[in-house]
Image 1 (cartoon, rainbow, N blue to C red):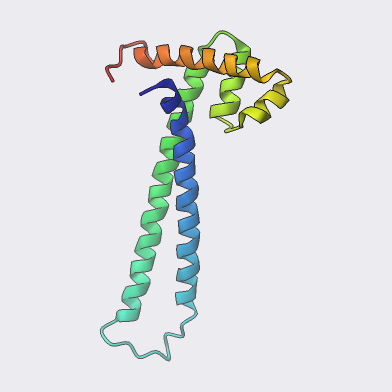
Image 2 (cartoon, one colour; image 1 turned 180 degrees about the horizontal axis):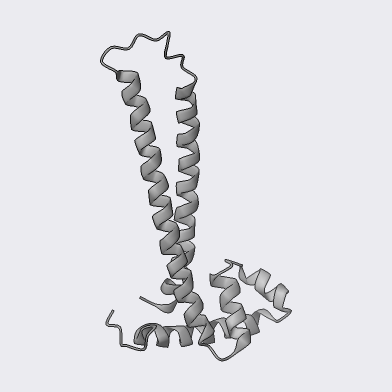
Amino acid sequence: MTAKEFLKNYFILSEQINDSIEELSDLRAKAHGLGVIDLSKQRTQGGKLSCVISDSVIELVDLEQSIVDSINDAIQARREIEKLISKIKDPLIQTVLRKRYIHFKGFAHIIADLNRSNTTIFRLHGEGLNEIEKMVRLGVNGSRQDN
């Protein structure tokens, strides 16, 4: 795994969580639609309606648990990224990497925010990636990774 892939992992997890939350919202809207049926006036054969409702509830609970698990994975990924970035000695490189990979800012935003030229920001970013690459190869705890 390259440094860039490692650093982008948190962004990918965050996007997956957002997609799952949107899916959860859609499922909840559908489930609320099932709730407006007056069950006292419905004649169901074989419990089809209750089966649909229970399936919807199970799907909601499963998706909610999946989101919780994904959030925990994202928190762990962010901690690992923050740990590596904090080991870089240059605070400006740390800032560039944090803005890019923790706060998901584009280069234009970083350039404007730090009031530096695009050449400087790209150079700092490259230097930071090189340092992270070395750390990823050695492993966060200093042991060598064979990828």
